[in-house]
Amino acid sequence: MKLIDGSHFFVNYAGTNGREYQSIGKLLIEEEKIRREDMSMQVIRKWLDDNPSHLKRVLFYNPSYVFFRVMDEGPFGSTGAKLTPGRSAAFDPRFIPKGAIAHITFDMPLTKGGTVDFSKTSRFVFNQDQGGAIKGAGRMDLFLGFGAIAAAKAGVMKNPGKVAFLVLNDVTYAGEGVEGN
Image 1: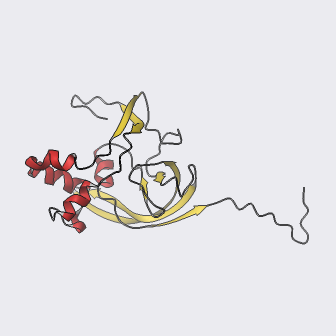
Image 2: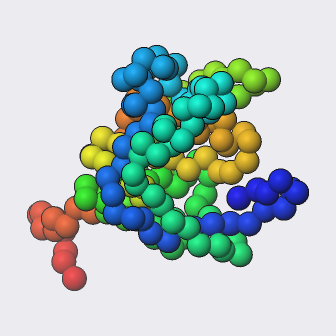
Image 3: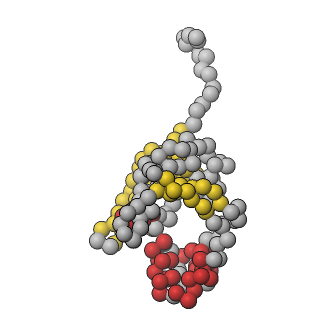
């Protein structure tokens, strides 16, 4: 977390209040304040800046709260491992085990002089985190780092992609000519 004076410190997940997440982006789409195709973190922030009389109503729409603790270093994911920008992912733990390795193909946002473009990207990632809003087998978040550039990229990450998991196959091959130990 970066403070006004320029200093910073790390925070890490410490728990939630247990209430179900309600998307303020979805609320603003349903109220026709923001078009679905325009939705991003940056667009939400701009709309709230332009409509300060709605700030409390919109922010308090989501009854789910996340609590954090101050850390000397980080950030760390739910596995306890330090997160790596562009390589640490979060999946719903009901479907994907922590520590799983996946190969993803997606459109990576590129920021250039205030504009955003996308580049087809393919890479291996590790399931090292989880998030309260990551629900279902078809959802994931990719940690992109911290700072203004990472925030600009993360704010527009909403495009579909492809994911393939590497899984242990515990079938033993006992074919002809193979010696067992």
